[in-house]
Image 1 (spheres, rainbow, N blue to C red):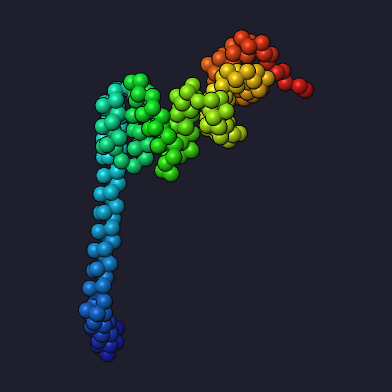
Image 2 (image 1 turned 90 degrees about the vertical axis):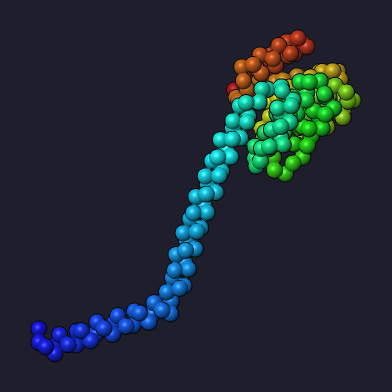
Length: 216
């Protein structure tokens, strides 16, 4: 390499460095600010994830330490847990109220859950079904059926249990054929449990009904 080429190269390098220094002076603070922001966001996200895990552990521990049926413990759960677990805590409290014989309060607690927009359909329907079970004995049959009918929709999560409750209400009202139709609907459902199958068959036989046989 000649002296002139070496000189040109050194000058070019100095110009490049000088240009980089000028760029850094102009844009360096913005680059540093962006890096700080990225690090802060990442750290904040990690902190929130850690807090969520910690809360989940604490919530799980609170549920495990609360004895089923312990009304005071169930009430404390409602007051302390947050997020989706709140609905579960409210259901626990409603069940505890029912177990303590506080039927009206239990019905009200279940109705509160059933009407919450935060509750998924499974939780809302469960609450509505439990409220209907408690309230039905004190209502005229037609009023009780109004509570149960929405819960027997084809896509309802507790359809079979609601059909069982409706069949009992219909039998009490003397509508035997309608009750038998509900019982046979239970017996034809592939998702029925063995316990539910047994209860439906026993109730059908006890009221003079016959199990519908599938036709080919």
